[in-house]
Amino acid sequence: MNYLVTLIFLFIFSGCKSSEIKDAIDVAQGFDRSAIDRRYLGINAFINDTRFGSADEQFDEIKTNLRLQKVRVLIAWNSAVQNSPNSEPFWGFYDSILRAVPDEIEVLLIITGLPDWMKDSTNWIDNNPRLTFIEKWVRPVLHRYGNNRRVTAIQVWNEPNMLSETDNNTLAVATDPESYVELLALAKNAIDEISPRILLVSGATTALNQNFPSSLDYNKAMRDYGATSLVDIWGVHIYGRQKERFLRKGGVIDFINGLRKPVWVTESGAQGINEQLKYGEEVWPFLRQRMPSIERIYIYQFTDTNPPSSTYGLRNLDPVLGLSDLYIKLRDGE
Image (cartoon, rainbow, N blue to C red):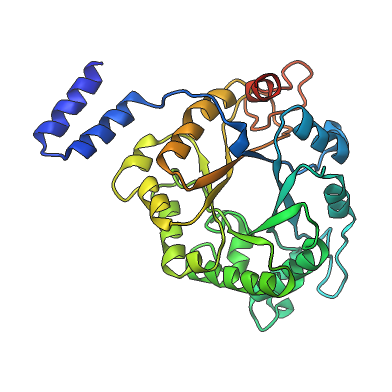
């Protein structure tokens, strides 16, 4: 309480506006805790480890136990899927996943990744790695799954600004948001030609409230280069707390509310089996209250092989501590 009184005192005597004083108090008080509304929740479900059950069993668990109806499914382009520029993609793994999706579940496909041969620029179409990604992978994915009625949206690329991800360097998007917007434009053209009903979601950068302000600045540059005119949904990732970065002038809230676009948080969550519920009940209601354009939040993630203390998964492989507190709440709650 002494800290809060001191903070208010400092803001009053520094000539701050009442709205700034309110935000400062809000930061000092932390997050309120509220019930989670599962209607806006989805989940990242990559279904790539049979130790958690078959694809049918995992999707049934999401539908029946967690009662969630939105999933984000990874469609990764890699050397196992297409081992040379002129070979046909192997669709077996992804076919089996999408066949297993129940009728009641809606799918967002995250399309990302590069096979090893993409590191060789002689394999690029018109000397453009982004065009090659669209022509060699996004278009085939749309032809394969664009008429699947469970698939309603695609998200093109993942965290394009992550410097440590070598694929971002190959596509030349890591430090160049204009090139990423070019990728979006090429994806939109492909969707319009092949499957116009599919929604286009922008690739989410690293968390808006972390790596601050670089992640937010990358998003602002995407906007300024015209991304809002290309996408149906703006995708973001949110991890951690950093409440002041949401509230400050020109911060995350001002940016999101200024987009005037529907927003999907395609990854959000906390590490630790006993930390996930608190995070969801504190951070997610705050996001929805302060940024009404946020229509969905996709939990990261359904399964994870890391130990209980560091897992993001609602399920892990520990024989005793295999379910997180958030899993239990979603399973047992109303």
